[in-house]
Length: 343
Figure 1: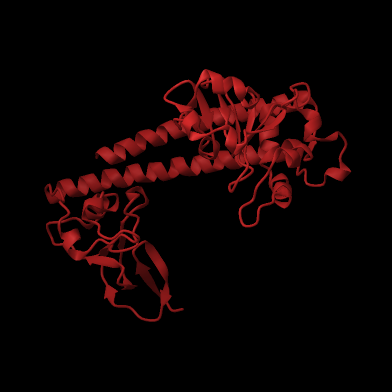
Figure 2: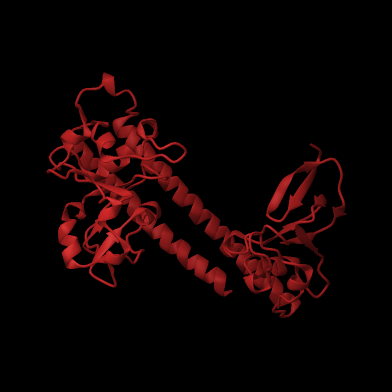
């Protein structure tokens, strides 16, 4: 450990007791960079006394090039046509030399760099606002209901199985043998899986089944207000089914919960299940060695609180307002991302 920063392909790697550069530079990833996802950045600027390892190209600019402009051009450049290697991509010096850089006048370069800096600063603020809204959701739950880790000390605590609706109130997806690849169709009833729950979106995925198979697996059908819970690996992820999605069923890696609306609101239950104390309880109950696995039997025994329904509805209203703000912020961020890509 020393006083001088030590850089590699993807940024600061640590500190060292010596330096080899003392000037403004651009570092471009040579190997191990995020070449498949340039949005994560493959170039960045450094200055002052520094050490750079052999996993990054060191670029000095001439008087005809603005360093901020060149870095902006390179940081999200799609260099995949120039990358070699399979298991670990490498951008060789020869490959990097083939990158074409648009080069307007130096004054125009500086103007573009300044615009991109301002847009990037706005994007950072939007992301920070979204993070604060996420924290607001969590704090709203805790303010209204507290930390519900000590169930034994609370009244109105029941097994989840006693707070759901119908015979299939807690229902896992079909056994793998019940849903095979030959059952898939080009259209019909959608099959919902972990990819939707983990991404928090219902507009992705393209697996379908026909009418006959759907009728056979109708107990696994999803409906508005159901909660979908991931069961394998990234277990415990929760997503509420909104109105207007395509009719369909869950796959074997999901479980659906249909709350009894006279006892539990979907919004309240979804946030209860994502509380750290509840997630810890799910983790303790999950089995499967290195990959956690939940099942319907375990979730049916999960202890849940039953606050007054009126209070749950107030919570749901507040969360809906927060989600509306998040939607506005995401839209603004998407516009800034598009602008950033176009400039």
